[in-house]
Image (cartoon, rainbow, N blue to C red):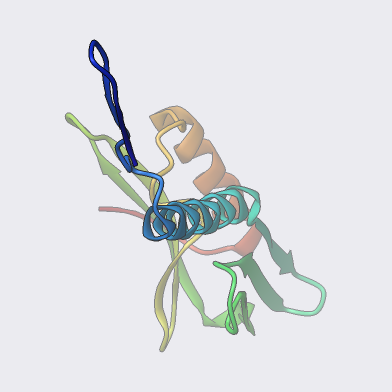
Length: 141
């Protein structure tokens, strides 16, 4: 609707207030909430490593991303552990990861693969204590 007089002309513009724009704004907002919930759950998603020498069983439990297969639970015998491995990569993106090598199953990371907070001394200390407890050798690669 336009309005016009001798000295003034007013022309109304529709602008961006359309139903479609409100629809897409709501979709984007809900999508961002989804990303926020996944980020929060991965931050709070934790677990434990249980080494029971009396029973001879190792249990590794981790919370994964939300979904059907969220729980990660591994259980195996201590006698199947071949060694404790330390992977150290220095440089621009240093990585210090502790692994456990299991006969028939490969290697399982015991520390987070993006963990950059361990100093070489701390990762060696942790590996030495765990290898001594499990009575297995340490490998560095």
